[in-house]
Length: 290
Image 1 (cartoon, rainbow, N blue to C red):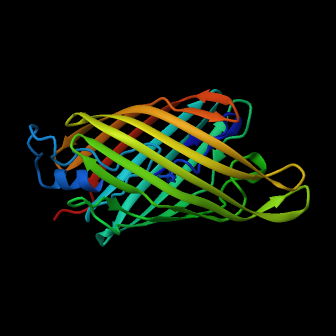
Image 2 (cartoon, helix red, strand yellow):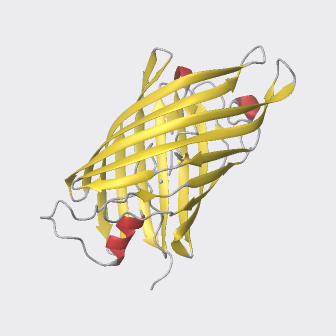
Image 3 (cartoon, one colour):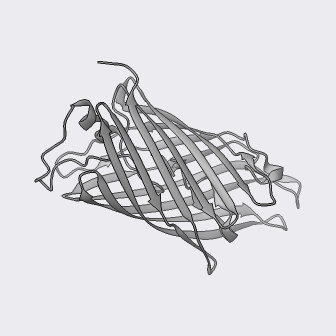
């Protein structure tokens, strides 16, 4: 799911992975293809995508199919800073409900490294894609203050993230859109010795092209209006724009699927540009035999 992305001055932000992304962030349709034991004919451009729910920064609107769970590892490096996130997605009885969690670890050369703020996600498959209707799966995520705010590894308070992903296929193209916000109700302001509520809206969009049945080209764009506590007690807001071209390659192994990906995200904050490297790996498999 989810949602990693860079913050101002090259600092990595957990919020974006779980767009969650993310969180952080991101199988159900691809799992259906695997479970059926076959693939659609390669000659039809309108056939279902063989790889789904494996985006990097922009969340796709698909829950896990019943009986299938997904393990996702992603890592972004920008300059001397890095962040790695492990996400696991589980269906709750059926494809309509999904529970997942994200464990972030980050660090930098000469700085602190360790666990950040863990996120617990619930996603509801409100609409399934059919006819001219897109897929829609709203997500609510609880942010747990497991990271050390003093070392820059978390906000130090519990929070909430909402994301509204929609997805629609157009022959060999898949388009995805995201919109939502992260809310932290009581971030401490050292200048005024009080707690300040912070709200950071976000938007995201992506286009994925099926070059071959198990090979996709990707272009993802995200915008985060990140609010933070200022030095004099007021809040500041930075606009963080990320453009990320990438590629993903998948393999179906009987009733399992492996997807590997690579992207080069470029982030612009207040005129400053950072370019990094993003790597992705997913392993999707059944947890019981039907």
